[in-house]
Length: 116
Image (cartoon, rainbow, N blue to C red; front, side, top):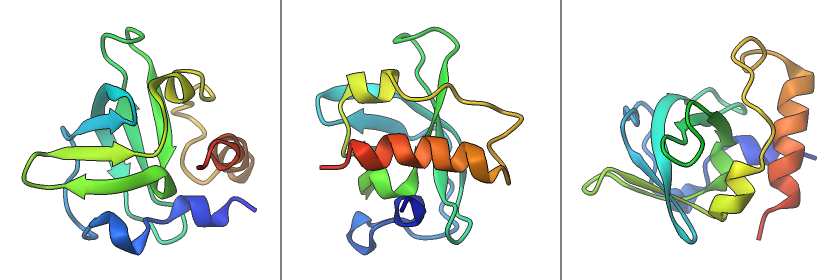
């Protein structure tokens, strides 16, 4: 089951409607990139993260369930993943990330298997 991976944990501190674009993303072992886009859709919330210098031009889709904490004061999002887990995630597909159930199953399944 990957549905729960697509919603923010109540303790994450995310307030629906907050613009997260530009927030830095912190993996458990350091910074990994910045939020390029996000969606707060019920049952399908996610972040699109630009990995920047880590892998030039690569973006990843992080389901909201990977977010441990949103720090609005510092403009940081802490996720429960290592940088390696994020770098090795499925390739972000701009054409399929909205409304494609198979793509969401692929991405959600990857992150579900790496949950702590």
